[in-house]
Image (cartoon, rainbow, N blue to C red; front, side):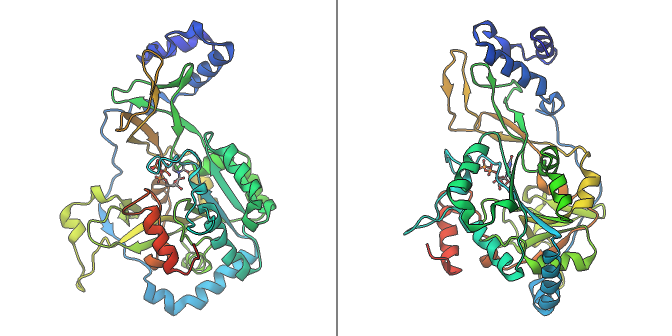
Length: 407
Ligand code: UTP
């Protein structure tokens, strides 16, 4: 794309302001801006102000493989999972490309120290959890770590500095997710500095295509990995490569499995695994009517009782089939730093625009089936979204202590 083409493209979308003052930029800045303009996904930007497209079909409850059943079949599930891990069939994918804006950190979220009397960062907790499994299986699980342009170098530096927290380096690979341009509430592109559009990671839904674009699907295949366990960076109690969960999914014949916990009450703000149009679907708490949220079965249990915790296993062959399907894009209100007309950097304290994200929950909906696998909340769910309050560093520390982790 050249300068004129960039200007024409911007004009066609009512975004000419982006190139104001273009002549004052350095050659490097000019090239960068033109490259960014050529990469803008205009179809996505056009979503601002439009109603979300709903998928078709009725929502129905799904239930779960509950803890009592898991206890009864624990040995069978675990043996199946361990055997498949030993055969090299499982890989793990850590989603660490997020910006952690609610925590307000100026470093990757995984570097947050949860220790009190010693250094114990989130990455270290996660690797310790993974080592529990690999020690049991006496086999390593390849770990693919998704970062973003904004935190990739620092994440790799930190893993190097800490000797991969005792995990073999040959089994760890990093890949970078894509970025998406952000806009203000009127749909106008924002600049984060002169000659540079404000961009942010494009959500956690694009992880598989980013992994493939980075050439790592070849690594997955070369190693004989047939399943990928994906998980969020911020749940420090996360069980990774859990043999019983993996085994239960394999034995079910489904092409995916989702870890779920029982919601604390009918209105807890988490997505619940259910069915829509006969396919797995995660219904967000704000999509459920009060009547549905409070509906119970004959034993008084909530019908939409099981919330997802961003820990899934997916069959690689199914992921390849859906890889080129366009995922729904979510338009999310966020605080986006930008430069104003005078070129001054503004760091908003309230949301001032939209970011565009695809989400893993929509990938679950692209599977034919997903095993809802219930886990004990207090043992496996300690997400750190904020510093204090619900789902925070404070609450995660309490849960880590309760699980015998020395802080
Ligand atoms: P969150 O939805 O909590 O987003 O991510 P976040 O960016 O970490 O935090 P906030 O909302 O800005 O405060 C859930 C998981 O998905 C990953 C995160 O790293 C986390 O593991 N994620 C999120 C990505 O890998 N890429 C993204 O673009 C967004």
